Structures are given as structure tokens and as C-alpha cells.
Image 1 (cartoon, each protein chain N blue to C red):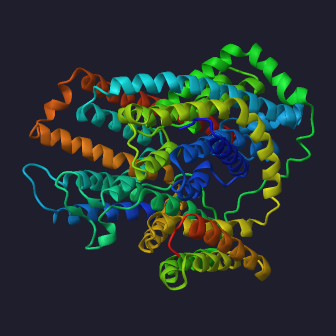
Image 2 (image 1 turned 60 degrees about the vertical axis):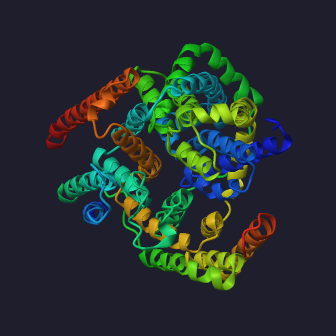
Length: 497
Length: 135
């Protein structure tokens, strides 16, 4: 396999362009873009499909800044952390400069993330070769806990996660291999197809949601704001990078680390990094720099546990792992021994996406997004409906999957209207079977001796990591709640006065 | 927030259903296939019950929409699509669903027709001819 063959490069370029257009348009998320693309990726050689996916995910997060610059509307949740600052910066110093900061620090952040991805995933994979079902159980539990406790609303996150996991219990059970919750339906014996669930939960539910009249504002076409000098787009941000090198490095490392934590992802990374600078009294440029470096570094960071352990770092890598399994590729240490070529290609594509594609295609994507915003919204939604139907059917050529997708669309709509996090349902779908499998294998192996989970040194360490994570996340939430209460108390006399 | 309560009620119901259905699963020495769904069922029941009974906080993020009938029609369209595909084939069914969905959103006939044609071309040209998906 040639890692940088023309078809890989073309896929990377087109995937990045597609991601930039989706990322720049508010309401159209990277997750929706990826879920609509997966049915195409299934028919491509893995290296070509993955190149497009990496390009898509890398540029969609960066392109999310464009909506923020243009109309104070973040294109993706990861850009929401510093929307005010980047928009004000565009008003003050020009949109070209604001987009330049976004492009340069996204690229640099992604570059640091890629370096850490290589080192981290190789290291983790080497360590994970020694792992048994006990260590994997604790690791997956770490992902579940951070996913639930990292949700904006703890109980809603728990309910969404449990729903995803419960959906994944349909089909053959891992303990005895008997059909479970299939209601005698042969089509459910293999369980709910992950990609069908994804298109139903994100694609079709988005269509229903839009039909209810929840149309987000669209940014103005960016052609006018992209008039500006090369100096403002590239040179000045690069000088800023030199000046703020320590802040940049700290943000990129922090972003990669947060991305590495299962269930966290780039949104979380951007919020924490930007908030740290904001509370320290940083300037607008510093807050934007911290947020945009962190969220793009986190994209690479989310791939570390996904590749080395088979545990997704966020919703997007959960989708990629679903694709891996559908293609018969087993992520984890085995991937490094059996498909090392594919792993190297992923590293190279990340490198290319950071250095070349993100600044160049991102810029072009902004122009294309301007044209796309002129496409009538209703036409765009009609096209998404058609592509979703084709995607669901093409996976198994089974009309039954269309029923499943329709029902999951209804579930997705209900959860979305109730402000439940849909991403946690997807994470539950991926992590649920892993958690059950490692739990049951461990238990059957030791005849239900629960102490066996604490007998191996690494298992003990991971159990303690779970405990520490629960403790620290609950402490953070408590601090948050106390601050909120203090603010409310402060606001109360003002209102009375 | 009525939607929050409805979703909580759904979670609660599914949690109870998980408990009920798992009692009919084959038994093993020690806990078997019923264990995991029961843990999830318990989480769903507890979280669903709390969210259903707790006083609603904050504004309704969904706001007030008037497109309920549109969403209903679209859902019916999605439900009808598995019946269409075996009868009409993939490309015509996808074109029909895309065109009708565009109309449901309130777009004009000519544009809906263009959307249907575009989707037909994608389904037939790329998926049926190029990728070999059965028509």
C-alpha cells in the first residue's frame, strides 16, 4: 500500500473540502457530515476512506470558527468556547486576521496533536498488549464515567448513555450467545447496525428537527470578508505564534490530553483551554489562540485511545471505530501488528491535513460555504433526506434497516427536544458491548470472583484512575454549582433593589 | 419542559421493559445475559424517574415551533420508504423521498423535481452502477 498515493491525496482533499463546508455552516455538524459520508466510505479501500474521514474531521472543527467570525454563530460546538472573542477580533482587526489566527493555530495545534498521536498510540498499543479483560473493563468504564460526568447535565448524560448501551444489547448476547430482545425478528439477530443507528439518530432526526421550524441563522457569504492581505492571514498570526509559543504549547498539550480521555473530545478541550486563559485575564487573541489550538489538537488526541485500545475518544472516533468493525478491522494492539501500514497512513494523513490541507482547503471551504449558504435551505434538507435513505439501505441492502432508522430518528428528535446529549447515545452504542463483553468474560473466567478485578497491578491502577476521575469530576461539578449559586445570590439583591 | 419529561418517561419505560424482558432470558450458572440489561434498566428507571419528577429548570431549548405536521409527514415518509424500495427500486425510491421531503419543507415543485433528479442520479450512477448496490 502506498501511503501517499494519488487516490489517498484526492480523498484527503475532497474530504477536507466537504468537512470545511459542513463545519462552516451552523446547524450542520461534523458528526452529521461524517454519518452521511460513512455509507460511501464502506465501498472504498480502508486507506482511502480513512484519509477522507481524517480530512473531514480535522477541517470541520477548524471551519466551525468561520460561522463565529462571520455572524457570531459557531459552526460546531467546539468553536462555541471562544465565539465572542473571535467575532470581536474580526470586528476590530478584520476578518482575514481572525480567520488567519484560527487557521494557523488550528494547523499548529493539529501538528502537535499528531506528534503526540504517534508517540501516544504506539506507546499505548505496546502497553495494551499486556492487557487482559480486567484491564479493558476498567478502561472502558473510564470512558463511560468520563462520558457521563462530562455531560452538561449529569442525569441526562447518564440516561442517554444507558439508552445507547441498551440499544446495543439487542442481538446475540456475549455470555451465552443467545438472541436477546429480538422479538423473534430475524433482522435483529445481528443487533442494530451502528451506521444505521447513526444516520437515524443524527441525519434523519436533524430533518425532523428542522421540519419543526428550528432553522438556525446562516452566516453571510464570506466573500467580502476574505478580502485581505496575505500578511494578515498568515504572517501576523505566525508572529503571534512565536510571541505566544508557551501559551500555544500549553493549550495544544492540554487539548491532546483532553482528547485522549475517552468521552471528552474537542468541545471539552476548547472550553477548558479558553476558560483557563479567560479567567487569567487573557486578551481576545490569547483566548482564541488557546481555544482553537486545543480543539484541533484534541482531534488527533481522540485517535490515541481509538487506535491503540479500540476505545473512542469522542463521537467522531466512535463512528470511525464502527466503520473499522464493519470493514472487519479490529482496532487495538492487533491493529498495530496486523495493519501497521494503515496506522502509518493515518499518521501521514494527519500530518498532511495539519500542514497543508487545513490552511489551504479551509480557506477554500469558507468560500464554498458562502456559495452553499445561497443554496435554499429546503433544497439542502431534501438532498440530506435522499442521501440518508440511500446510506441506510446501502449498508446491508435490507429495507428493514429503514424502519430501524425511522424509529431511531424519532428517538433522536425526542432526546434533542428534551436537551439530552445525542453524542452520549452513540458513545453508549460503542462502549456498551465492549463493557459487557469484558465484564462477562472476566466474570466467567473467575467464576464470579469480584476480587479478581483488583488482582493485577495495572487493573488496580486503572481502578484507582476510575476512582480519581469520579472524584475530580464530581469536585469540579460541585465547584461549578457553588459558583453558580454565589452568582445567583449576588444577582438576587440587584433584582430586588 | 414537556419534551424533557417525555424523554424521561421513555427512558423510565424502557428501563422497566429491560427488566421485564430480561427475566425471560436463558439462565446461566451465576448471572447471565440478563445482568447487563438489568443494570442499564436500573439506571434508566432511576434517572428517568428523577428527571420526570424534578421541577423543570431553564428555558425550553426547543422553543415554540409550528411545523409539527411537517415533522409528522416526514416521519410517515421515512416509515413508507422500506415499502417503496422493494417495489420501485433504490434510485426511484430515494428520488421520491427526497422530492417529497423538499415539498414538505415548503419548496416549489420545480426545485423539488431538481432535488429528486439529483438524488436519482446519485443513487443510480454511484451506488447502483458504480458500487453495485442491488437496485
